[in-house]
Image 1 (tube, rainbow, N blue to C red):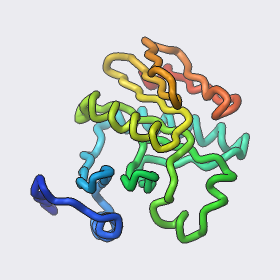
Image 2 (image 1 turned 90 degrees about the vertical axis):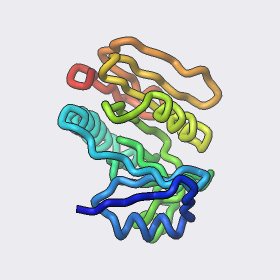
Image 3 (image 1 turned 90 degrees about the horizontal axis):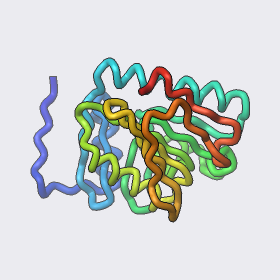
Image 4 (image 1 turned 180 degrees about the vertical axis):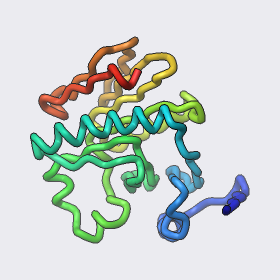
Length: 189
Protein backbone atom coordinates (compact mmCIF):
# COMPACT_ATOMS: atom_id res chain seq x y z
CA UNK A 1 0.00 0.00 0.00
CA UNK A 2 1.30 3.45 -0.89
CA UNK A 3 0.55 6.71 0.83
CA UNK A 4 1.05 10.00 -0.95
CA UNK A 5 0.99 13.21 1.07
CA UNK A 6 1.15 16.41 -0.96
CA UNK A 7 1.64 19.87 0.54
CA UNK A 8 -1.07 22.29 -0.58
CA UNK A 9 1.53 24.62 -2.14
CA UNK A 10 3.21 21.85 -4.16
CA UNK A 11 3.13 22.43 -7.93
CA UNK A 12 4.05 19.92 -10.62
CA UNK A 13 5.50 20.74 -14.05
CA UNK A 14 4.44 18.86 -17.21
CA UNK A 15 7.66 16.82 -17.17
CA UNK A 16 7.34 16.02 -13.47
CA UNK A 17 3.72 14.96 -14.01
CA UNK A 18 4.79 12.47 -16.68
CA UNK A 19 7.37 10.98 -14.31
CA UNK A 20 4.89 10.82 -11.41
CA UNK A 21 2.19 9.24 -13.57
CA UNK A 22 4.60 6.63 -14.93
CA UNK A 23 5.84 5.77 -11.43
CA UNK A 24 2.28 5.53 -10.03
CA UNK A 25 0.31 3.78 -12.77
CA UNK A 26 -2.13 2.39 -10.20
CA UNK A 27 -3.23 5.95 -9.34
CA UNK A 28 -5.55 8.03 -11.45
CA UNK A 29 -3.75 11.38 -11.58
CA UNK A 30 -4.63 14.70 -13.16
CA UNK A 31 -2.89 18.08 -13.14
CA UNK A 32 -4.71 21.38 -13.45
CA UNK A 33 -3.47 24.38 -15.43
CA UNK A 34 -1.72 25.88 -12.39
CA UNK A 35 0.25 22.67 -11.74
CA UNK A 36 -1.76 21.34 -8.80
CA UNK A 37 -1.75 17.55 -8.65
CA UNK A 38 -5.17 15.92 -8.39
CA UNK A 39 -5.55 12.32 -7.23
CA UNK A 40 -8.83 10.79 -8.33
CA UNK A 41 -10.17 8.04 -6.08
CA UNK A 42 -11.24 4.76 -7.67
CA UNK A 43 -14.90 4.55 -8.59
CA UNK A 44 -17.45 2.33 -6.92
CA UNK A 45 -19.25 -0.50 -8.62
CA UNK A 46 -22.25 1.45 -9.88
CA UNK A 47 -20.11 4.21 -11.38
CA UNK A 48 -17.81 1.66 -13.02
CA UNK A 49 -20.80 -0.18 -14.45
CA UNK A 50 -22.25 3.04 -15.87
CA UNK A 51 -18.91 4.06 -17.32
CA UNK A 52 -18.60 0.69 -19.04
CA UNK A 53 -22.08 1.10 -20.56
CA UNK A 54 -21.20 4.53 -21.95
CA UNK A 55 -17.84 3.33 -23.29
CA UNK A 56 -19.35 0.24 -24.90
CA UNK A 57 -21.96 2.27 -26.78
CA UNK A 58 -19.27 4.66 -28.04
CA UNK A 59 -16.93 1.90 -29.14
CA UNK A 60 -19.70 0.12 -31.08
CA UNK A 61 -20.69 3.37 -32.85
CA UNK A 62 -17.07 4.32 -33.57
CA UNK A 63 -16.20 0.87 -34.93
CA UNK A 64 -19.06 1.24 -37.42
CA UNK A 65 -18.33 4.83 -38.46
CA UNK A 66 -14.53 4.86 -38.15
CA UNK A 67 -14.72 8.64 -37.69
CA UNK A 68 -12.31 8.92 -34.77
CA UNK A 69 -10.78 7.32 -31.72
CA UNK A 70 -12.51 6.57 -28.38
CA UNK A 71 -10.60 6.79 -25.08
CA UNK A 72 -11.39 5.59 -21.58
CA UNK A 73 -10.77 7.34 -18.27
CA UNK A 74 -7.17 6.13 -18.03
CA UNK A 75 -6.11 8.43 -20.91
CA UNK A 76 -4.73 11.82 -19.92
CA UNK A 77 -4.71 14.59 -22.51
CA UNK A 78 -2.35 17.57 -22.33
CA UNK A 79 -4.74 20.46 -22.91
CA UNK A 80 -3.63 23.69 -24.62
CA UNK A 81 -3.73 25.48 -21.23
CA UNK A 82 -1.12 23.01 -19.86
CA UNK A 83 -3.46 20.89 -17.73
CA UNK A 84 -3.43 17.09 -17.99
CA UNK A 85 -7.01 15.83 -17.78
CA UNK A 86 -8.65 12.42 -18.08
CA UNK A 87 -12.32 12.52 -19.09
CA UNK A 88 -14.35 9.42 -18.22
CA UNK A 89 -14.98 8.87 -21.95
CA UNK A 90 -13.57 10.95 -24.78
CA UNK A 91 -13.41 10.99 -28.55
CA UNK A 92 -11.03 12.62 -31.02
CA UNK A 93 -11.79 13.09 -34.71
CA UNK A 94 -9.57 10.78 -36.78
CA UNK A 95 -7.92 13.58 -38.81
CA UNK A 96 -6.84 15.35 -35.60
CA UNK A 97 -5.57 12.11 -34.05
CA UNK A 98 -3.59 11.22 -37.19
CA UNK A 99 -1.85 14.62 -37.12
CA UNK A 100 -0.06 13.58 -33.93
CA UNK A 101 3.26 11.79 -34.06
CA UNK A 102 3.45 8.24 -32.73
CA UNK A 103 5.36 9.56 -29.71
CA UNK A 104 2.60 12.10 -28.99
CA UNK A 105 0.00 9.35 -29.26
CA UNK A 106 2.00 7.14 -26.87
CA UNK A 107 2.28 9.79 -24.13
CA UNK A 108 -0.32 12.36 -23.07
CA UNK A 109 -1.75 13.46 -26.41
CA UNK A 110 -1.27 17.24 -26.71
CA UNK A 111 -4.82 18.16 -27.63
CA UNK A 112 -8.27 18.58 -26.19
CA UNK A 113 -10.76 15.88 -27.22
CA UNK A 114 -13.56 16.90 -29.58
CA UNK A 115 -16.05 15.20 -27.26
CA UNK A 116 -15.95 14.38 -23.53
CA UNK A 117 -18.15 12.72 -20.93
CA UNK A 118 -17.78 13.20 -17.21
CA UNK A 119 -19.87 10.82 -15.12
CA UNK A 120 -20.53 12.04 -11.59
CA UNK A 121 -19.78 9.64 -8.75
CA UNK A 122 -20.36 9.88 -4.99
CA UNK A 123 -16.79 11.15 -4.45
CA UNK A 124 -17.15 14.03 -6.96
CA UNK A 125 -18.41 17.50 -6.23
CA UNK A 126 -20.69 18.97 -8.85
CA UNK A 127 -18.70 22.21 -8.83
CA UNK A 128 -15.37 20.47 -9.54
CA UNK A 129 -16.96 18.58 -12.45
CA UNK A 130 -18.47 21.79 -13.82
CA UNK A 131 -15.07 23.47 -13.65
CA UNK A 132 -13.57 20.56 -15.55
CA UNK A 133 -16.28 20.74 -18.21
CA UNK A 134 -15.71 24.47 -18.57
CA UNK A 135 -11.98 23.82 -18.93
CA UNK A 136 -12.60 21.29 -21.70
CA UNK A 137 -14.87 23.76 -23.49
CA UNK A 138 -12.34 26.60 -23.17
CA UNK A 139 -9.64 24.34 -24.61
CA UNK A 140 -11.55 23.22 -27.70
CA UNK A 141 -14.06 20.50 -26.84
CA UNK A 142 -16.95 20.80 -29.26
CA UNK A 143 -19.49 18.79 -27.21
CA UNK A 144 -19.45 17.62 -23.61
CA UNK A 145 -21.87 15.80 -21.35
CA UNK A 146 -21.79 16.01 -17.57
CA UNK A 147 -23.97 13.17 -16.31
CA UNK A 148 -25.26 13.12 -12.73
CA UNK A 149 -26.93 9.72 -12.25
CA UNK A 150 -28.02 10.46 -8.68
CA UNK A 151 -30.04 13.53 -9.68
CA UNK A 152 -30.79 12.13 -13.17
CA UNK A 153 -29.53 15.34 -14.76
CA UNK A 154 -27.35 15.86 -17.83
CA UNK A 155 -25.60 19.14 -18.55
CA UNK A 156 -24.62 19.67 -22.19
CA UNK A 157 -21.61 21.88 -22.94
CA UNK A 158 -21.06 23.45 -26.36
CA UNK A 159 -18.67 26.22 -27.42
CA UNK A 160 -19.93 29.74 -26.76
CA UNK A 161 -23.40 28.57 -25.70
CA UNK A 162 -25.26 28.45 -22.42
CA UNK A 163 -25.08 25.06 -20.72
CA UNK A 164 -28.23 23.06 -21.53
CA UNK A 165 -29.81 21.12 -18.66
CA UNK A 166 -31.81 17.93 -19.31
CA UNK A 167 -33.81 16.10 -16.64
CA UNK A 168 -34.01 12.30 -17.02
CA UNK A 169 -33.34 12.10 -20.78
CA UNK A 170 -33.92 8.68 -22.31
CA UNK A 171 -31.27 9.33 -24.96
CA UNK A 172 -28.55 11.85 -25.79
CA UNK A 173 -27.70 12.88 -29.34
CA UNK A 174 -24.15 13.20 -30.62
CA UNK A 175 -25.44 16.01 -32.82
CA UNK A 176 -23.19 16.93 -35.76
CA UNK A 177 -20.04 16.20 -33.71
CA UNK A 178 -20.80 12.45 -33.51
CA UNK A 179 -23.05 11.89 -36.56
CA UNK A 180 -25.66 9.20 -35.96
CA UNK A 181 -24.61 8.51 -32.37
CA UNK A 182 -27.37 8.24 -29.78
CA UNK A 183 -26.52 7.26 -26.21
CA UNK A 184 -29.19 5.07 -24.62
CA UNK A 185 -29.48 6.37 -21.06
CA UNK A 186 -31.62 3.49 -19.77
CA UNK A 187 -28.78 1.75 -17.89
CA UNK A 188 -26.99 4.99 -16.95
CA UNK A 189 -29.60 7.07 -15.11
